[in-house]
Length: 511
Image (spheres, rainbow, N blue to C red):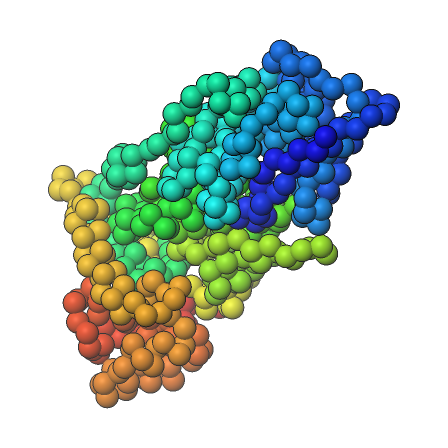
């Protein structure tokens, strides 16, 4: 007899429908799995056989063929265990159910018949809803994650026995639900705050501009000047995630199996800080079967590269595509996969290998050649793609020891949200354009008109500092954001002047 069970396969961060076809025929006992199945899927026959027996059911001693259709999509992971087991029981006429046509199934089986959590359940639930299914059976540990998807019944099951009894209609299982507003409220608080930062008012201002316009920023200064401290507090002043943004980010973490228990939806913007020993595949994504990298895990959040010259040059250079396109495309011989990668890049570096070049309190021991080699690790094309360049000096003792508290993150965030609100209205008719930092050159003519004074100011800056066309565009974007923070529709000379100051590496500081 032939049985068909509906399941899903994850490709990139999305899921595609997969039909698990099980045929039981007379002949010598055998268990064959076909349909471009990877190692973990081929090994499932032993888990499925033991789980069926240990759940109290008879395993058919006949020729079993399992086909995972479509056969041209690679299947991997242990999530097909439960669909295979249910298909075998249905083909053997042990299970008779009309619900199988309306429900998708995903789950890994233990030898005792219990169901273990699977990766990528969230995109699979989205695919099931898109396919018009009534519900989806998932491991109980993934039930809340899948319940993020509205409009479909999420049935969390603990064991193979529970799944069979539910489908047979002899056991009722209450569909899983979650309280979305409560999840967002629980993640609204942060462990860090800008009021803990002493001094460095110009750096705080730059961080505010960064958050308001979604600009990338580079901070250059001696050790202990507060670069890392500032970067870690940037997410606290970013606008709240919308549900659509939270869903996009959560899909990446679901595919990677990084969702923590009790966190069905990521409602706080991610902050990723990879170590400088990371490979290009670890940063950008890749592998034989492409997986998201740190840039995708930072989607809708912040990617912080501390001590950036210590990263391998080829690793830094792969950042060019996601910085321009907001996504990563990884091509292999058989297919091409895209991952989302829209993030704010924060780069920190010292002025020289020892860190004290230009510091009045410490003497630099580096030679000019060492300094030049150190700075050259960040290529010109990469620096051109970073909107803001900032010098972070050492903190004077009086500011460091002051008793007063700085401005809180909530106060800064309020201004940032107002500026983002203006941008949302401005770009309402533009698809995939959410903030000033994402504007293309064609958008600048429409949204960044200059008066004669501003035009003359930026013309002088271009001629004096030899700015590239990309630097010119960056200044216009930053100026637009500063004007938004000033609640000004017009882009005035003072906005452009401040924006020019955030391109310090164009002012002759780069060797």
